Length: 294
Image (cartoon, rainbow, N blue to C red; front, side, top):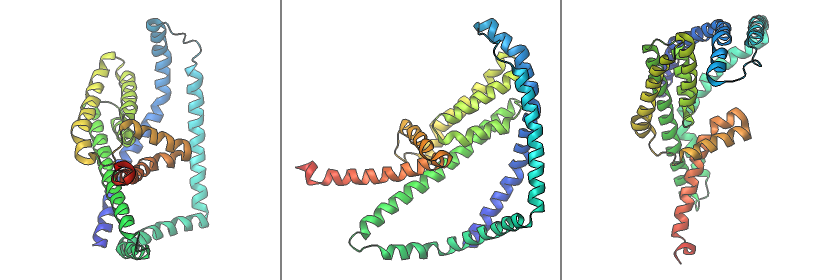
């Protein structure tokens, strides 16, 4: 059973890598190549339009200098990446370390999957007998809530990324896969995926078609995605697993980012899910206590 799970996971990751990574890499490269031209277009048409229609003072925005600096840094980045790859290939110690990690990670994962039940059983037997029922129940509930939430949220992110990507491809938008999947990935924060994806797609549509009417299909795509998330995806895959209000989710992510940086953002929602389980359990004990009833 462990071998089947392990092989299936590796094949799934390999298939995902072979299908999506080349497409994403191609769109990122194309976007970087076109970015100087987009800045020229914004300098020639975008800034005059803002000055004419909105009365903004655009004299302080020098996009030509920004374009020149961008091109220079892109060339420097290419040289740095090439030098880094040459250094890695010439350093036998670094190459050996990478190979060892590639071998050890699957091996360790295999044995953890195989012996996981035994590890949990031994930890369970180490608990004080008086506290064992309460601790086991609490940890079991936290594990169920956290597992269901994480799996559900990953499915929602993947589904939204596919909806946005396919929709943007249908309307013929450049970089549809890049924008759509990026919006899906950051959608674990409420409304962030919508804001990021809609903003990027709107800018891409205006630059590509140079017509305000081109924004309408983008709005329709993201409207369909948002409706699908609200009506079907979140209730079906996530439901009320974590028990947090969307505003509380946003504050949890912000607090995690402020305290622990990027890893704090990744761990904010799992930590919040566990904390909510503990608080619900404590609230239930409080309602049954003499302090509340008497």
